[in-house]
Length: 273
Image (cartoon, rainbow, N blue to C red; front, side, top):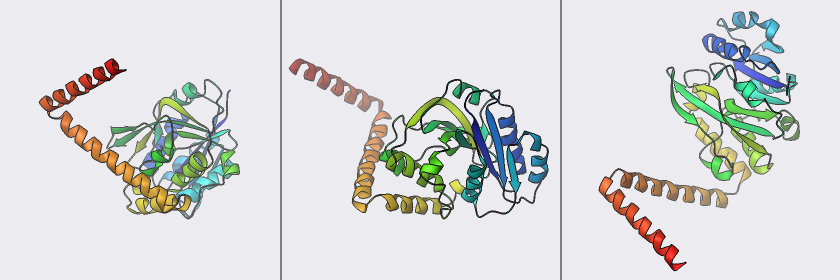
């Protein structure tokens, strides 16, 4: 059967999205998983949909909660798998072979990080591909896709659960706590794992301006201003350089001239060496 995976879906009044998420999980060819659904006391058809699949669920509950991360923590406390994957309602595994392709071998890394489609109105608009080596730079202006990251369950024992006072970005706090501060091991999966639907439950998070305030607050809780200021300054310089480079690339004659100058400089260095 391979390693046991706990897939946890959090839902609130998103019946259509929940149905799509459930279908993507229950159609997996890999059987070594348990499925948990944490519903926040939905008033739409969500409880009815869940009821159709209770025989396929390891655990489910439908009751009011204190927010998305409180619901996720509920799921963690009930999970028994070696790895946890959080797939919120409206997001889905991209094909039926996702789990089988990843867990064809046993993994030992603390976190398995895959790629994630970002979809809008039924079309993929971007593919989130985290860098192979995750450093503080990776998290200053970005994060890794929660829906495409398998987390060893014992990390929640070693480093604690999601901080529920963060309403929008507690997963970001968890990545800093485990990957950057805790130096947990990370394995990059060369695989698109999930589709993140901006029209579903997660869109409230993406479009909420408070997410930037929370991210800044979280970073400040781990690093002194001197370090953060240096990173912000360096990243701004890098952004300015990329802006200039992209402008040059759009000027065909100037770009060829720059390219020729680079080749001449490179050859001169070889001769001098």
